[in-house]
Each structure stands twice: as structure tokens, then as C-alpha cells.
Image (cartoon, rainbow, N blue to C red; front, side):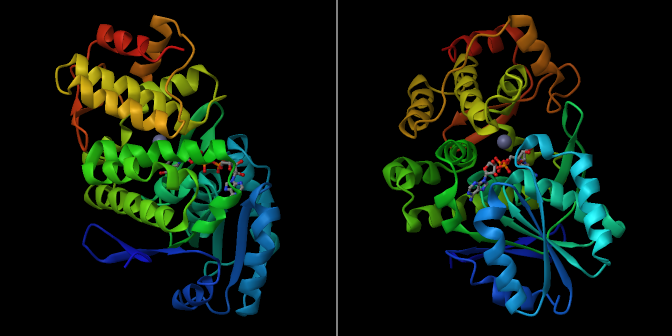
Amino acid sequence: MMDELIVRGADHAPLYPILLEDSFDGLRSLVHSLHIDGRKICLVSDSNVAPIYADEVCSLLEKEGFFCVSFTFPAGEASKNLDTVAALYEFLIEYSFDRNDVLFALGGGVTGDLTGFAAATYLRGIRFVGMPTSLLSMVDSSIGGKTGVDYKAYKNMVGAFYQPSAVYINISSLQTLPEREFLAGMGEVVKHGFILDKDYHLFLKKNTAKILAKDAAVLREMIYRSLCIKRDVVEHDPKEKGERALLNFGHTIGHAVEKLNEFSLLHGECVSVGMVAAAELSVLRGYLSRSKANEVMELLRSFGMKTSVSPLERQTLLSVCHRDKKADGAKIKFVLLKEIGQAFLDDEVSDDEIWVAFQTILE
Ligand SMILES: NC(=O)c1ccc[n+]([C@@H]2O[C@H](COP(=O)([O-])OP(=O)(O)OC[C@H]3O[C@@H](n4cnc5c(N)ncnc54)[C@H](O)[C@@H]3O)[C@@H](O)[C@H]2O)c1
Ligand SMILES: [Zn+2]
């Protein structure tokens, strides 16, 4: 039951499966089910992930009869740009990849976003398979069809909605993920409970120690449940016209903090402090009780996630919040909570309220 999810399109037709496994072994049957026998595969990966996993995955694919080449780029957001995409195009041309060949994105969100974008655009679109290895990419970026790269200082400025042929998650690859990256991914995980699923929130609360200890069964259930939540949201709202905006809980102030700290903090860390501020705003606006806001804070603290940041200038913070792409004209659409597990959009939040809420997350 917990091994496979199907993501469906607007017409309810199945788009692609997401497989949850404890090793790479299940890739064998997956690749044959994709009807790509005889095709070339390019395994795209970054300089941290490739040395750990690329050989194992490539040799497994070769044993299944595929010609597999590996393209590796320097790890980090700084590589998520058109230059890396161009280098990948060059590599594919050099190996004569045609429209029937396939890209495999083995790595975190950076690898997934840029490989998906290269797949969407090379020869007007070739197939790709997601193989997320960071927690954030497993529960968030590998699902929903958003691909793209940064352009100069502008994050995710160039991209396309483009779906993978399949997503293969080897949960045990989390064992090599640095702890700070794991906790950043937990930012998106706990967000899923806060916005839409109180039961899931209680599950996370109850299993905090096991999650931190990377208990295999608990991690599997956690990733499965987060995927279900994100899948349901993107199925209802594939192009982010409505409900999908709820996934931006903690992201308005989070993005501002991320940007104003010049991306020295991880995205999930900024989302974590952004959620504390959004919970505070929910109290200030009279929607959420103080004790529920405390619960938000307590869960984040119990995981050891970031709940405070260094001060910022009022005008700087507010102008970045207003410029955030999730803002609608002059009004910012804040995702607030009525309850834990019940988020909604509020476009009446004033600058003074944002500023008061921000004070509560200062170091
Ligand atoms: N497409 C979407 O819907 C979507 C959603 C959220 C975030 N994103 C994007 O995702 C990116 C962030 O993703 P991320 O946090 O995974 O970043 P990332 O890909 O840079 O990975 C984080 C770090 O962990 C390393 N790593 C990944 N898996 C590992 C493993 N198993 N073992 C050892 N090291 C490992 C990477 O090399 C990197 O250093 C951002 O670019 C963001 O814009 C996209
Ligand atoms: Zn996010």
C-alpha cells in the first residue's frame, strides 16, 4: 500500500507513478515498465551525490541492457542556471541523444529542477525520471511538474511545467544526507501537517524521536503521507491558480528572509521561521489561538529546526515581502491558519501586522 502512488492529470488519467523503496533494486522493474528498452540514459547528478550513488545506479541500468552515461555538475544552487543546462545539452549532443532517449535526475531539488527543464526543452521535450535523494526533493520538488533554473539573481525565473515519466525514491539515500539538509526538508514536511492534515501533524509530533533517528518505517510513512498531501493539492490545482497557494505557508516572510540573508540560510530553514511568523500573524488577526501557535513553535523546536533570525530593517523586509512573486498586485496573499491542519488565504494583512509578527522571530 505504501510503496506506490499515482499522480493523475486534470482528466484523472494517470500521469506517472512515484515508487518508494529502500534500495535502488526496484529500478530494474521500473525501467522495463517505462517501455524505454534499447534507449540511452543520461544520469544527471551533482558533485556530492554522484560519487556516492552514480556508479551503483549506472551499473544497475547497464546490467538491464541500457547504455548509460553520467553527467555531473558542481553541487549547489549556484549551478542551477542556463550555463549548466547548456553544458548538459552539449553532453547530450555529443552522445547523440535523440527524442526517444531519457534523462534520470539523481539528486536534490537542484538536480531535479534543472534536469526536468533540460528534458522539457531538449529536442522539444524528452522523457525524464526523477530520483530525488534529499528530503526536500522527495516530499516537495519531485512532484508537481515545476522545472526550471535561476536567471542571474532571480530564483526560478526560467522554467516549464513538465512531468516526469516516473519518480523513484530510495529512502535509504537519506542516510548520507547532511543533517542540516535533512532538517531543512523537515520544514516542508511539518508544513504539510500545519496546512492540511491535523492527523499527520499528530503523527509527526508522536514520532519526532524516530524521525530524527531516521527509523526506516517511520520515514517511509512520513514521506508517503507528505507525498499524498502534495499530490492531492497539485492534482486539484496543477498550474497554481488557487489551492496550491496554501503550500506557500511560511514562504512569504521565509522568502524575504532567504533573500535578505543572500541565500546563506537554507530554504527550509527560512520556511521554518516564516511559519512561526505566519502562525503569529494568524493569532494577531484573530484566527488562531495562542496555544495552537505555541504548538507550531513547539513542533519546530522539538525537531531542532530554526525558529529565529537576525534583525532586518522594516522597510527592506516589507518591500521584499511585497515584491515576492506570491504577492498579488499591492496586496500580499498570506497563508494563515484557522486551526492546525486548516490553512486559508488572507489578503488583508497590514504592513504593521507583518512587522509585529516579524519581531517575534528575532534572535
Ligand atoms: N520544483 C519544485 O516544485 C520545487 C519545490 C521546492 C524547491 N525546489 C528547488 O529545490 C532546490 C532545493 O532542493 P534541495 O534542498 O534538495 O537542494 P540541493 O539539490 O542543492 O541538495 C541539497 C544538498 O544536499 C546534497 N545531497 C542531496 N542528496 C544527498 C544525499 N542523499 N546524500 C548526500 N548529499 C546529498 C546536495 O549535493 C546538496 O549539497 C531549490 O533550487 C529550490 O528552488 C523546487
Ligand atoms: Zn518551499
